[in-house]
Length: 313
Image (cartoon, one colour):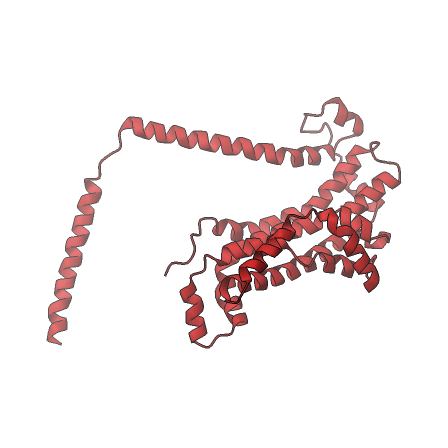
């Protein structure tokens, strides 16, 4: 008791002295020269100007497509760089949406992309965890074998994948499309690089507490990689949502078409391609909207982890 009564006033006096010293340091903080402040402001202005210009270049195609969807064909070609149409033709979206089952196409694309992405996330996380956190022979060789497959062009796998799905009776089905895209070498590589940043002490502590490998992956590793998982989810979803070549080979029924093949078949098979550009742009705008909504949902999670430097011991 006597020790505490002596130590506490001493600690309080030390804290008071530290606070006074901090206040004096703040009051006596040197002011940067005017030239230095002007240089910093000019660099900041130059940086923001460059980023604004780059952002404008990236968003301009979508803005131009949205603008062209509300113009007539004559107006599109008479003044292509005019963003604001003379008359906003909102009825073009209604006519385009009713002229083909675009709602069904979007739902097909969304369903296939969602289930494919979830399967890719699960198997990529498990494989990446195995080659980073488990110790077994030839895990490095196994990783390089998997990465060697990443060098193969996607078109090389079309014929063997088509034959395999034909033998399984999964041609012209969403199930075959999902199974054929259920593995991602990029997902394994990306999550491996992320999992390497997780400190080994956390894994060892969980194992000492009796946690299994699945629980460690689910409760320790994945919660620390939310931004990376959101990024992988977004990239994989967009890739499968916009996929065109492989679905066009595998799917032959019109009711099972994805949005990319559905737009192509409607505007080319009906002979309208190049004749009604406003409807083409309206259909493309409708197809892009789900991706924009998904990006808005995942944006906060992705940006929150950009400055993440990993877990420190």
